[in-house]
Length: 272
Image (cartoon, rainbow, N blue to C red; front, side, top):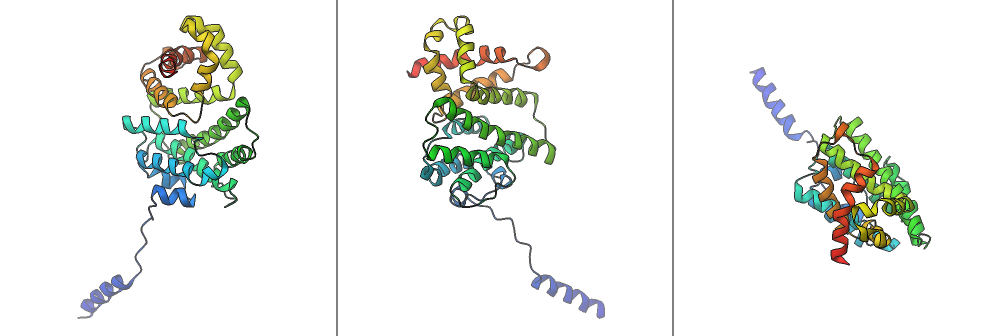
């Protein structure tokens, strides 16, 4: 009889005991409004949700800082991920991407004075500095703008790689690593515009003779962060080339230039 009462009391205790709350899942709209979603939360989003989130950040809080379209190039990459089933939650690509988006989100929050917490993401402070300078009208020179933008994204990207590999124990596949090198080349191009123009002057005749004459407007188009087409098209090409296995498993800067530029220049000519 006593054992029966023990069972009954245990059942009653189970009914009245507090149930651990499930993790709150915030929508892209809620994240864009609050600017408080962590990289872990963003990692749980689908790529389509991340794209919605980024667009809402731009059209919402970032617009007040004069940045309603400063991450369209990232939109292009996200659209590419969506088309190819890449960046699913919990993967190496997803964690790196989540850190990039977290840095943007927290950078906007910092620049607006809503918070002083960058969530441990070194890109947050850099994005805040970029946005503050942009809002004050200090980034009207293309070289200066692109360098500030690239340095902010680079900081968040490196943080994302560290989080994926050191915290979550993930490693990219060989194809993902080579694709990542193309993204590194893109950010490097933003920081080194004069060098890119010089390289195109030297190698342009081998790639496309017309490229020498149109290299300045081409580089302007290719590195315009307000455009989604170059990054989306570039991602398509980069992923195709990344599936090749180069000698020694690595690309040099010139290899990347020869692989990346010709088809993108054709795309540029078709749109201009």
